[in-house]
Image 1 (cartoon, helix red, strand yellow):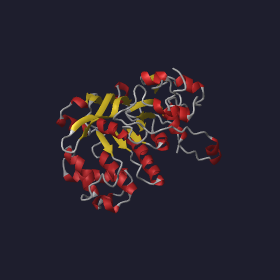
Image 2: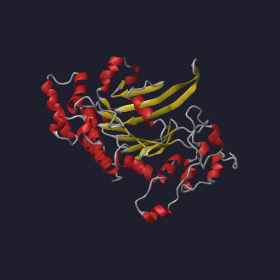
Image 3: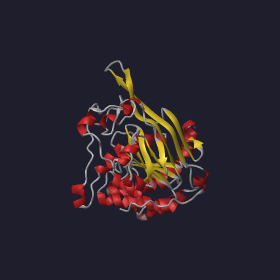
Image 4: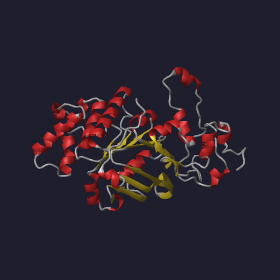
Length: 365
């Protein structure tokens, strides 16, 4: 897979402002306890003050460990989960403040491809009906024949045959079902699609086919993606920019090539060190960063920097002062107090994993 960053076509939406702007997005879920009498026992801080922009025709990759809040972010952007606070501005409209009917109209231009190609399609509906349904919901095309013609065009667009419109989901492979899900998302001519780990349930060879399909559709239609994944190789192949998420917060955002060549946040460095290299000689010699401990609970996240209990570079400041996501230059943003020192050191941790697990108690602030 190529790692090059593709140029983004210039459009009116891009030149006049962001296609999508997420501002200080927060999503907390209540925690209750008790078998008979349910009592409030805290909050799951799934997404905590997340902000990012996506331009027309661009792909932003959102990566992180399972449970870090990636899918919740996508759901909140799509209003499938009502945000606790924050704004989502799409094509100049603040959709978080719209009424339900207005949100539905705005959502025509915002679609979603789900992770599970088996569970996201209605097994009782033919492929043609599955793709036609959103057209009917949004009252597109004047006649049934017009909709059917459009269904056949979309099937060919995603690499399927027109004759397959009468078949049912169980008759297709996993990769074909994800093509059908992609076709359904394109039925209402969106300008933005949230792709929630769309290839994680597929074989590696099929993953490449779906990624290539998404790239081809982007070049043809100018659609923008929020591409959610945990596979850094897949994200590098498809994304123009990448946002790294840890425990509900963004810790680094930059150009795709820059992230892989010059990662600044210690968590990003650890993630990249775990990605296998095809060259066995290089793979045998390279040093991996093993993070101590487990990801803390989002119910009771660490104070200040949420990564500090596992960070080999952590100091006292990290325990008392939260690092803000700030620009370092050339569109590169990182949330770390000591990113300069980390870069100057070549990424070599100053302490062992055991010391990091103790929170760096052996060192002063």
